[in-house]
Image (cartoon, rainbow, N blue to C red; front, side, top):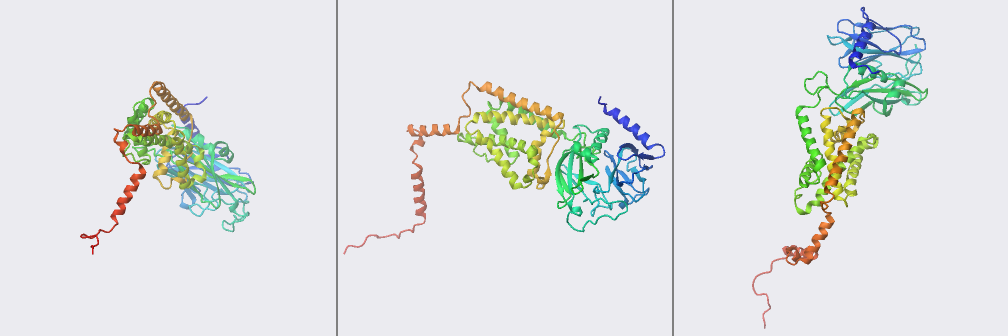
Length: 536
């Protein structure tokens, strides 16, 4: 039975109080999580006893949702012996005969902060996360450092080193690039999404446990990419404000087939404390109003777009202009602009279809990191729609009205309830507007809300197309095929002598006349006066 979040929170607080105790002592066991309440004034001493002799390294980590905590080896923290953040940890390299490890925890907030802590042991042949750190303060730093913007999330970490026995000297990090050095190590980057629309502390605490140990990470996380030591140890992902996500890295030694995990890091890509645009209310009132009006126009287009042809042309032209200025429509109201309008409608539908294609895991293939390859492929897929339906403009218009109009409802829903379907177009606009977004992986969660909203989208699209087909089945096909219009006009000009266009000279004669006029511009002017020879 699934317990309510309030009950889970109370249970977590009870466990935290029982674990920390009145004296600020937290007794831990290797590989087991413990919840603990931290405050600013009374540090908690975390202790592990009876560590087995075959354990060479212990990674101790602590996680909180939004308030930073301080973890250190000493009661008085220093820069090179402590870490501060919501997901922080330290690595203890054990000495011979050592069986006890001690760390100190406290929060930076005056109020009590709920956190969860775990210590994970590793053996002699396991690689050491962050063992070749040259960038951060700690000598050996197993932490993953994360920062985010509204566009992307950036994680980076220190390279690992090979494992070694207690009391031995660590392998040199720059001794060479052969198979006997750290250069043989591989890094697998994993991603894990928290439940959508859930900002509970206890939910985070329970799920972050699934991303802390190697086997659990492989079982629950999604492997996004593998880095070798030749690659830079930093990765970019698309930002999903309001959606919780956990990242972790597994370092793998192919020679010994051993692995170790870094310290997982989480983010919601938003702030819990800001008064505006915080994690609880991401969309502004103006944004909600805009997309609600857009949804109303979309529903009108979905069910009545084919009948109100000129209105739909106006709406879809505006859409085409917003997403990239695809067409020049200065003469679109003219009689001969039907082909241009059908191309417009086909491109808007093709744009959405191509966006859906790259919304799938296909969009994260490394070949599409190159902007030239991406945009050529994207444009080719988008152009497939008007090319395939060039002989069926009526069907093309109905499909465009139904699918594009109903998708505007999805965008409106995304202003009130999180759904990954909004990122079908959002991620593409990010790539258009941001020069560096091509380096970001755009994987998104697809959970219960998304399946429901996808079903609503499909239902609206099918309903709109079906209703308009039934309404227009007895009407004259509209608009007529561009080739039929051209053929009808040619026949009319050839038979109706009263039509001024009937008296237009053939194209060949008109071109010849223009060339003669241009030629006369370069002829020298003849002198005035007598031009005939005098008769003798």
